[in-house]
Amino acid sequence: MSAPTSPADLYRHSLRLLLDKDIPAWVALWGEDGLMEFPFAPEGWPRRLEGREAIAAYMRHYPDHIDLHDFPDLLIHETADPQTIVVEMRGVGRLVETGAPFDMTYIAVVTVRDGRFASYRDYWNPLVLREDGADFAGSSR
Image (cartoon, rainbow, N blue to C red):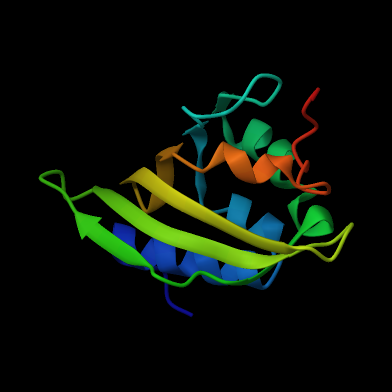
């Protein structure tokens, strides 16, 4: 596959990697000093991950806890900054531990620099954390 040419293409490629459970390849899409933020993270969950290594550590066990099947309702909006997109989507699948359905709504503001993710503000729905088996980030809840 050729390298993604736009922020939207890079984002779509990243979703395919998540569905394929290829976390190392997903992490490789990040710039070395990438920043991932979770403004709605509840107490005990990380709100800010600085650098590719911190993002890799956070995502390492994701597929062991959440089995993603699809990202329906994907909308990617361009912004006045050609390197920044706003994404609306759902992630659906199941929780590995319990087999319970997983259905998360996301809005993300994503900035790409030099073909890699530079900034990703993830406005996910913290209410889904009430489900047993949803804790993949080592929270202290």
